[in-house]
Length: 499
Image (tube, rainbow, N blue to C red; front, top):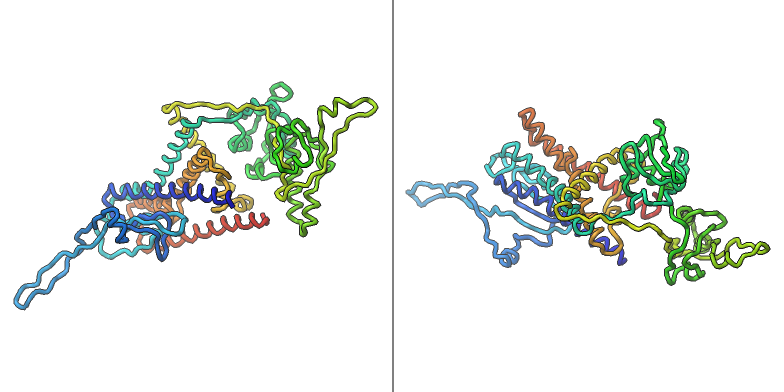
């Protein structure tokens, strides 16, 4: 429960910040061009709201004076014998700032604009309305939110590099190389290959970009047994990035020796007497040559455990035999009594955890940036993230890609289990880039849909009718609701173990 709350708080804080600044981008350009904004809300407020500057006590607290402007003239009847005269009626037109109760986004209600706020447009137009402004001004108002989100991501990445630097283990220094699955080995890779570069450029660190670069490469350069070696990827090989990640075992992982570095107290590993320095040779009779192989076997047990119907069946799956190698025991071996390892029996936790940490001999490298250096480095890093995300979008239109869509649960799970400001800001910057890209897609009801129609108007000099815009808004909103339902349904099915 504690982990759930920590992730939920991080998710809400990040989304609130991004939505607030996104809508502030629209708001700022609207104010620059003297377009009236009637409402500015963080979170949606169907039926009621938590907080609003229209509330009397809020206005008194912040000493906010009502803003009134002349809106129309009416004829006022006079006494008998006097001529009727006209008076200007004034009404409150200030922006209502508020906090809604439904944390699914936010909105900025711009007067005279057809959008998700579903405001009614009068037949009479006014100079403060969105629809009466020049096309280029309306275009800037619409891209304001996306622009802020994109610039915000670049700024956050720059400040991350300035404050924390960039820490990683260069793949060329992973002297044990990679552990590859059967598909990778069929292409010519071998365990312990040290990745160096591809025909698309050098390989820097083990991350999503490394997979992306290998998936598009026709040549991969490695160090094999101390010698440079080039692996030629056949033209017929269709390396699907999504399948590379989802394969069990994964296409490649850093090769980790199955050597115990430390044992966590109170865990099954501690109960059976596992010690630092122990090497795991086999699990349930299956020989393992690395921690990778050990992990693969645990993942296989996880699939079996998912089908267990009774507590007895679950206990049977979680009961394992380990064969370990101990240096002090091996030292006592003789030719007549050879040492073949010790056999230990353990019962894994319900989460299939044994409770030990493997030994790592790699020291991470940290690159530090000065303030001025961090800005171009952050811009480059953010642009690289965006281009990678855009190139991966093609997988969304495949059956496996559709299954991989995630909703609020999937996004929330990306945040760490403990409060980590470094990771929090990395995720916030990445979500800002996603929000910017998704909003600029040419789908009605999104900013990109409005931009598309504005570009059409600029090119053809013809403005789409209000009726067309209203219908397009409904269609776009329907598409967004459908995507949201599919994404969050995937989260539920994954939680229930059906995906």
